Image 1 (cartoon, helix red, strand yellow):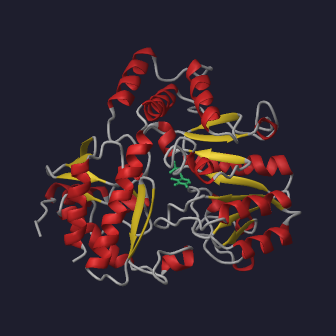
Image 2: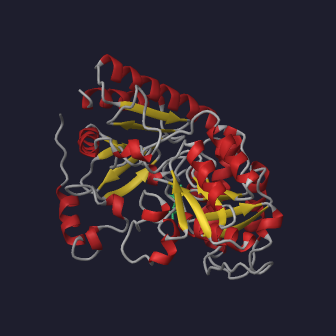
Image 3: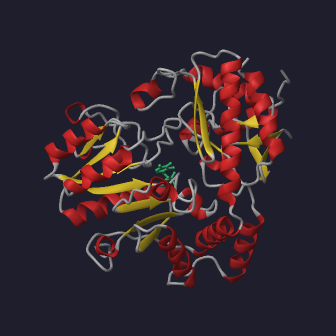
Length: 427
Ligand SMILES: *Cc1c(COP(=O)(O)O)cnc(C)c1O
């Protein structure tokens, strides 16, 4: 295996350890024994400070569906920079991007622009509570909705709920119930038992933060039915899947309409942006139209909006999802072949559209169907795969519990190189 020269990265990380907790700005980046330091990135490639070049499947953890530094986004941002980057007063880009979102998401009639996915789910939950007048929310075990108090709960039933972090008041966690993914019976039981107190069920329609876990046939339809019958709002957290599984996200792909949607990542074209969207009746409860407070200095800032608009227009114009489906299928099929050819009994692969992940675990011949199974997968083996792939010039997200992303910038050649790297690395 080729050796990797990472001296400068190692040196920078040592220094960072004295300046940033754990040496990083967000936990997953603290790869053991040390992460590489990025110098620049373009297209499907990211370059480190020691001069190494990698084909990138981390892609900023999801936003960069067009690849790094896409010219259409770059051009939009440059043009906007000349006009100014913060106004503190309404501007036309808000209408332009809102119209695009409303067009592609039938469940959405109005939007609020915020600055991150975390802010979007935080605001969506407050909106659901304000709209229904109820306090409890329900989420999926292993479902990730950002880094705010209400959603940082460990797996476990309501009675045994444990915060996933220090610093979270018990009272907050007690209002967050959890159910396993792909379990209709558990859902219907919890929803019926708590219906008078439950404001909303929030879930990622495709779990993208415990590796990649797909909804089983009919699950999302049942989710919609159970929540509707019990008068509980359904929030789809489409921060990964929105504009990724197709222009209309998971709700279009699976034909299931939520009450509230959160978007992020792709919708910002690689700049910080979050969106809360719903039908008018719900959205008009948000301030200043209604009395659910939500505000932000950088909400709807013109740089994020013009980048997002350029990205969405490019996705529309160039029919990028069709190409991504093809590359995704090809890669997943090749990985399945590698697994069977090399008789890797304990390995499974999960994939949809331009998302995929290998699991070092296998359950009756399939990848995990919920968090409990995902936890049984071998994280150490995955980290070993991460380093083997990196030495062969392929940058995967550095955790078994993340998802790989293909972008429009990945060429057929990139995919071939990647398949070969997997084949050797899994040997
Ligand atoms: C990334 C992510 C978030 C949080 O978004 P940030 O922009 O990182 O705050 C929320 N939900 C899901 C499903 C995500 O993947």
